Amino acid sequence: MEELNNFFKILEKKIIDNNGIIYDTYVCDRILATYYSNKYYRKKLPVNRFYDITFDYSTIDRFIKSNNIKIAFNHGIDHINFYSFITDNINIINNLNIKLDITISNDKPPFKNNNYICYGLLLSNDKEHENEFKYYYSDNTGTPLDNNANNITNKIIIDIINKRTQYIRGFYSNYDIFTDIYKMINKGWKITNMPYIINDIKENKKELNDCCPICLEKFNMSNKEIVSLYENIHRYYNSNNYRIHHHCLFKYLNMQKNNNYFKCPYRYKIDFNICKYLITYQ
Ligand SMILES: [Zn+2]
Image 1 (tube, rainbow, N blue to C red):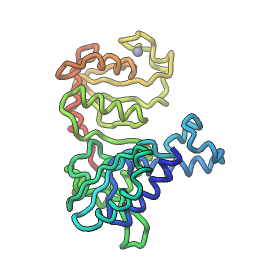
Image 2 (cartoon, rainbow, N blue to C red; image 1 turned 90 degrees about the vertical axis):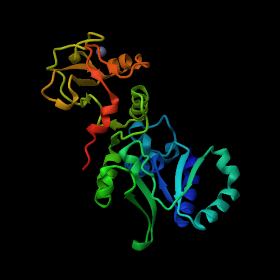
Image 3 (spheres, rainbow, N blue to C red; image 1 turned 135 degrees about the vertical axis):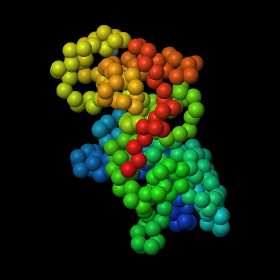
Image 4 (cartoon, rainbow, N blue to C red; image 1 turned 180 degrees about the horizontal axis):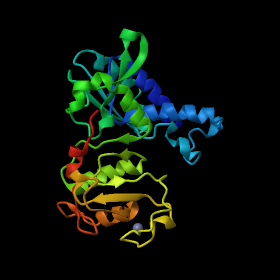
């Protein structure tokens, strides 16, 4: 991990110096790493355990774990200069198992193809302001945010630090969307445009006398995450609704792989294809 993160710093500089743009997961991972490594050092935790994946879970995003990096270059000679760096360092790239995804295009990444709002954030050089680099939101995400890209960079960065984002696209079947969203959730992300509402874990549960329809445990008996399910997704607060443990619902939905859409234990339709109508663009 230490070697990977050290090499990423060199690689990143080469990309940025050659006018490349970095996009997708690496940009989010980098923002989180900057934020949480500062936290780690402020807590005065031991430097020699910085890359210890079992140490201090509260700042676990302090270093980059994924070895994928997506880069875009304009047509021209920039990418040729960059390739010679790759050739010179091919052994280390192979040893660290780094997967470079390089696109040559005059269009801006993510080429209207980002699955989540957060993956529209880009990293490149900032020669105009004499900074080494800048983060900025792409105007080529294929969403209404393209019209407001200049103004939302800071909001997106704050959302990333809080690991909060929204699903846009990428899959057709309900089960594939569900699987992809839960991949994000398992990495600690909160997806805020799901067909049900995941309640804040810190919410006071003492008053909840009802119980989970799957495991029948009373909600006030444990600290498990609770979901509110609504019969009519577009009338969130005045349609029939009930509570269920998040984990119990997940297991229940996970058994419905071959259905066109999911059904909850009370037979409400749960359709992950409507996530796109629940995105809040600001
Ligand atoms: Zn339950």
